[in-house]
Length: 221
Ligand code: ADP
Ligand code: 5GP
Image (cartoon, rainbow, N blue to C red; front, side):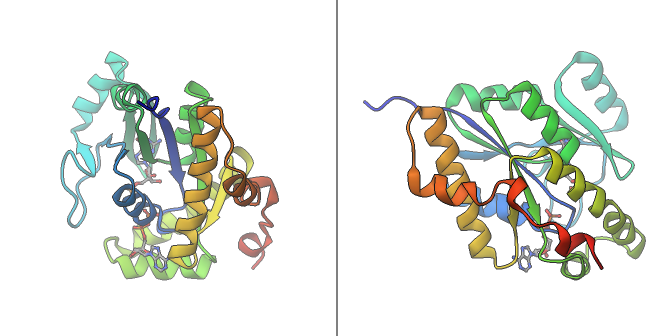
């Protein structure tokens, strides 16, 4: 029997609208051993979101009780609502040797990495441009104008912080290319955890290190 695969915590962060939920869902559909890490949140469900699948939707009182119990590996306030990763979700994924896929903000991702530095890999998903980010937010049409303006204003700081703290950056321009990039990162990191090397994946992943990215295309108007 082959040894069990080591668990991996795949943290995806991005300015809202860059496509990390799309990438996360599609990654999970390709990997039988990957699961979405379902966070708890105080915000209301949007569109077709379902309780227990997209988020655990909880009241502010319930969220506060979970904080008091120490149930969260990390939690943060984003756009005026609270979001948190349940410790149990992470521990179950690691014990089962699965890939847990996180769709969380950069502050939360930094904390997951600090708790599980060996098993966590942090990936910043970037839009091809700020203009395309706005088009995607409007195209998704789940947010009011005011929420879109708020998300765009937050995008720059999320990108600057992510580029400074995260391991890798993937530009989500053509979706299938972004997916291939993510696959290379996961193959390289899983090989590392198994004590082996995937040289082809490592060569691709090295080019995706945050330090290799020229950030001028997002920050110069
Ligand atoms: P996030 O989770 O980062 O907020 P979503 O995954 O909800 O972003 O994507 C925002 C919108 O952009 C959605 O309507 C989605 O279908 C679209 N989208 C995602 N990736 C791409 C892509 N590569 N090209 C064009 N549109 C995309
Ligand atoms: P949304 O409301 O668009 O689903 O999420 C808003 C932001 O909260 C996104 O940046 C998302 O990644 C982040 N987020 C979702 N869950 C968590 C979590 O458990 N912890 C942290 N820190 N951020 C989260």
